[in-house]
Length: 103
Image (cartoon, rainbow, N blue to C red; front, side, top):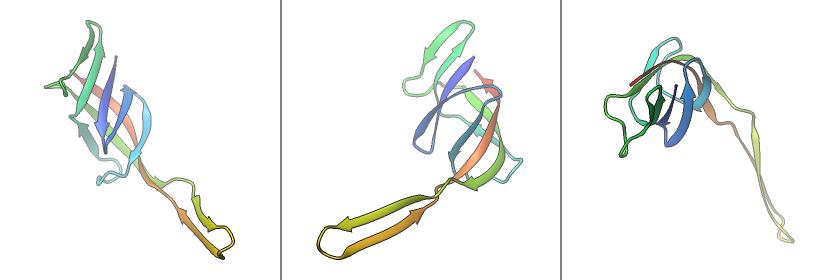
């Protein structure tokens, strides 16, 4: 059984027990999160799609931790002009574990 959920403008295919990294969510570590924007749901009876969402379906998850990804370097350069700009960025994330898919 799996579900396709939408959170923070992105879609994730999840099954029970999965650990995924999503955009930073405003929940504390150890708290319960419910994703009610379920786009598709696969079960024993078959695959069902929402138009655009499946009513009554939800996914329960637990927040494991918060963190930042590896640093990426943004370097801007213009030839023969002496223009150089170096900037770094670390995207914050939330690590969650999928506990239950409710249909």
